[in-house]
Image (cartoon, rainbow, N blue to C red; front, side):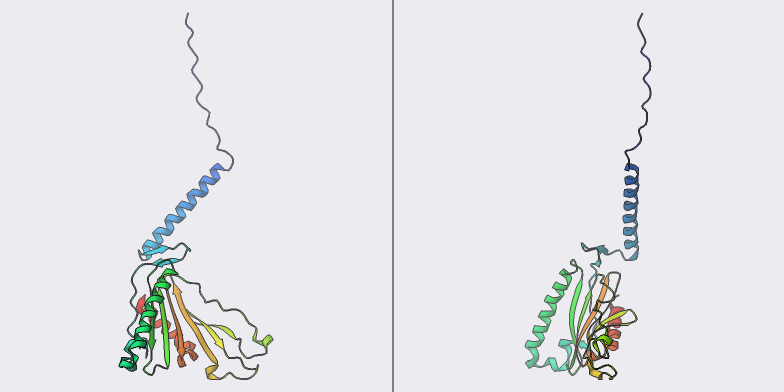
Length: 225
């Protein structure tokens, strides 16, 4: 008589290795988070990308403004339209083009523009930098305690005007003595948000007016954004 083999028992489900379910769960959360970030970025503008440094960038072209208050592009100042100024104008334009390329490379290849502006006297000038990438805000300025230094204001100072932060260099005076109007020197004022940064570095008389420089940053921001 032939023996009929007993039916084999169904496989018993095994428990996942210790920590496996937790790892899978965490990976699912990470994937979901990245997907959410991508959807959010696309919803905002469609062109934002994360650079290798983790900052937001944007490839959309930039057009610098035709005028910033009383300031016009360097080559458009009447004093620069004479033959005597031709070499200087050519040099400034060439340097701006190369600076624009460097600014772009330093922020992962994002769109960037560097342009020089001046007033009609050429006594005040602006170097305007616009690039489609985020930047630290406010600008970093080292802390100094004027009381300990025995001066009225710190040598290096951060001032903020709305959404613009300015790095200031002061000519120090003794504590209790009012600083001279031209003792305040603006190094740079900048505004950043999303994938856009506007920075202005002034020279000449206008550098003594950080609030005016900050207002011009806002003006450029409005024309670009």
